[in-house]
Length: 231
Image 1: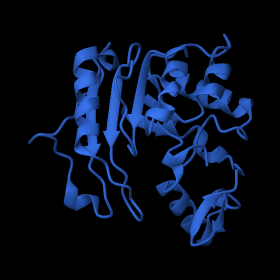
Image 2 (image 1 turned 45 degrees about the vertical axis):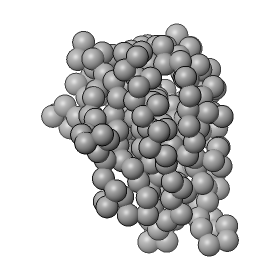
Image 3 (image 1 turned 60 degrees about the horizontal axis):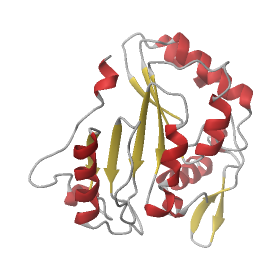
Image 4 (image 1 turned 180 degrees about the horizontal axis):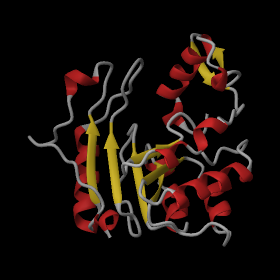
């Protein structure tokens, strides 16, 4: 577990379920710890998926590694390089990369062999004030668009510096064991985004049954996207 935001990760549950169903690319990725599944640290690379975006001619917004982390320690740099080359070639798509491992992302992408791609968004997760330091490392990483995912937000993040950041996503934890999110935590981040000119996207209140809690804040939805994405 990288930090407390990982405790109830949906991807762990999903990977364990897919592994139990015999899906080869999830083999060995999870283990049981008490009554729940946790990551083992083992990484499988699905070669067949790497070039899939090149076959999709309609422009899409693609969340890279939605079930894993491209900058996980066990991911060889040659694979990161391969992903980068595909994203550069498939320039008609937009690719979003989210990591909690900002140290490795910064170290790898400072290499001049990784060009700054206008269609690649780099982001990090910040679940509470204790992990706001990740934003500084994100800010120091070369990127056309940077974003912060305050999800699952399990504690307040006060007076955070979002300079160099273009987009903020805020959301509560959902699913089994979901930890509550206070309204003022969301309002604090919304106001910070307004003050600093950052696009604000409110994803959900979360909870055990997120469909019941919805995603409205002060009577409306917030679906802003970064202006830099259109440039």
